[in-house]
Image (cartoon, rainbow, N blue to C red; front, side, top):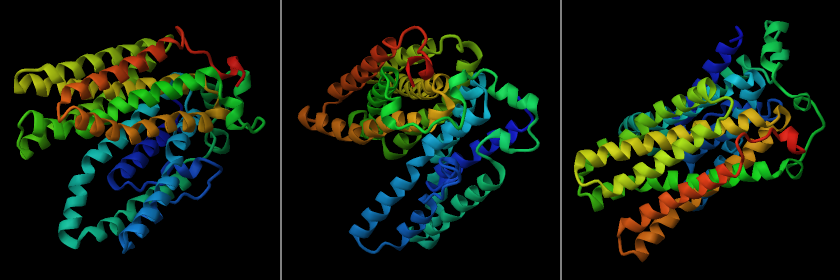
Length: 373
């Protein structure tokens, strides 16, 4: 790895970690469009000042708009600073930090809220977002070529495996220009899989308490396990993709989908408490491995010039899936009179449909430049 990239990878880790802890990191969004100012940290603080429901809704909506730049900006930064052979690992580190931040945030938030009240949470959490923004502004440049300490040899290492059509600074392109069949496959594969992912993670506590009779304390401990192993799964998925599957990354993606579907099913049919805990933990692990291994596909095939726009579009599919997933699960439970069997069938079916879409990508998804992007 080039000497400069350890600084970048540390920054990429710190930014989403702070974002996960505070839900405020402006981090990589600063790099989305030539250091364009981002807004999540400011709107986090404003949330604490809201006095009516309408004010709260407006502020959170604006927060979401500002935060929306994060995924696309982060993947674009990684594409600019890492060669293709290392991008899956770098993106996995970023995704893992985000997961760890979300896991640790309750510990931080509860202490602040107990001491100073709920409004203070949003004021205090403005601080890490601002600090991370400053860190990124000072440390990370848009391109390695803008850093004097990066040598020509390092630049060649980073850019050596890029196709001729992937040069930064090429003619600006619109969303319409990049919407090839391959991009649509990425979009729908992620959209449908995220329905299963968020359906499992959002309804697992309810399932453990209502269907399995767990106490609140037991539920808290058991429901945290998928997230803990998920952090390992995310970084592991990226590393495995770069280390063993760089010639056919789709194999790892399909394998994690099969395992995710299997352990979701076993979670429902498990007859003992320990079998249930083991299966739901394994399900969380493979669901997380999928996330990092899946993103390795577009990270290795989309040209740098289109990385921000394309990954932003793909991520939108996942966000839509995450939005409708809890609603779908709630509706299914209502129709099934609280029977979770229908819910688990739905989750497994979503994963299998996503798997079929990945199979349609072919043995090795072609680079966007090869299909007219």
